Amino acid sequence: MDWFVAPEYWLGRLVFQRALAVVYLFAFLSAALQFRALIGERGILPVPRHLARMPFKHAPSVFHLHYSDRFFAAWSWAGCAVSVALVAGLDSQLPLWAGMVLWLALWAMYLSIVNVGQTWYSFGWESLLLEVGFLAAFLGNDKVAPPVVVLFLLRWILFRVEFGAGLIKIRGDACWRKLTCLDYHHETQPMPGPLSWFFHRLPRPLHRVEVAANHVTQLLVPVLLFTPQPIATVAASLMIVTQLWLVLSGNFAWLNWITIVLALSAVRFPAAAPGVAAPPLWYEIVVLTVAAGLIVLSYHPVRNMVSRGQVMNRSFDPLHLVNTYGAFGSVSRIRYEVVIEGTAEALPREDSDWREYEFKGKPGDPRRWPRQFAPYHLRLDWLMWFAALSPAYAGSWFGGLVERLLENDRDTLRLLRRSPFPPDAPPRFVRARLFRYRYTTWQELRSTGACWERTYVREFLPPTRLAAQAAQSR
Image 1 (tube, rainbow, N blue to C red):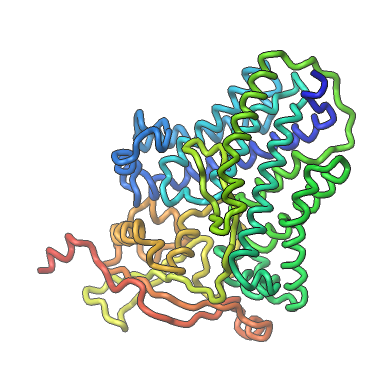
Image 2: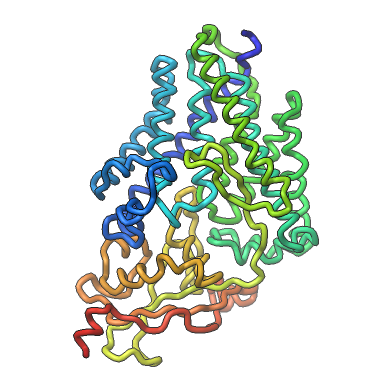
């Protein structure tokens, strides 16, 4: 079956699989370092409480069988170890079937985490990693040439990622049609990077060019992925350049990086293909069966794309095999931030000694310049951005966060850049206030050294203390 394989893509497969394993590594590392405070046994949204109301069929996960913080930590670090092994090329040293099992094991391990992650794992790039990771298992290893049908399905995912994002923009916000969205986006995006201030201060005509180029890359170029080479390689390369522009301008966890990895699978590298054996019959049957199933399941994301009621970042099955993607269907014109403060004083007055908690990634101190964290995912910082958009986004977790700050919870404080209180002296009260943030001008930056200017808007959460402390004071 000569039509079944494409030997000329052997190097593209190698680069794609090694890069995908690096993305997996960041995903498991994020889980291992953050889970205790977010979803641990004493976390803000504990896994055991979630599993008590979530049937296995709706969220398959190994943690339905057993959960403890120690087990979750071991699971996450094991995922890191398998990822490193795949980066090093262990799958190529194994028989074909064993290499496939190793990739599927990594997918199943991360699926188990996502399906118990709740709000903290509700981002589109979680499903994207799972969808791509599942398909990567059927690309084979050095024992066979990459199958054509799997390469096609990877391009199909890339097409849905880019084209779906382009459609949601055109449909969702007039500023995309007027080419004005980037007058605001670099300032109001969830987590600015170290260069975001400079991107925002680019001339407005260049912002128009940015938006127009984005529309071309997301609405026209994806169609070229299904054309003969070298046109498909040119199309994928344009997408990579666009994604690198986004990497420079903000912190979007691994969304940009996994899109780049996907695009690499469509690139035909100028390298001679090594001689490989013909694929075994069992492998052909498995690949074609899986491909047929995924094509059938693709009905749902296609229907969503052509619908006027298109939604973003939704999975259509509990295994996250097919999903719909998209980002920034609407763009905020004003940036709001929730600033959390605590005081050790017995009576929380306006003139009390309120001390501000500092987060790692989200804006806080106007003089502190943003840092680069992506592809590492700061989950709490991202949810704080959503909380500033509307208190409704914080309803399930914000109270738990405040409670743990009042307790000086060690795991929670590790998610922050700095706590203003010593470990043995927690605050008596914590409050949250909403501020409007804007980038300073060139003149303001030179005179004050601050990249942000902030203005108080309103109270987000009144001074709050632990219930036990309130009862004792009565």
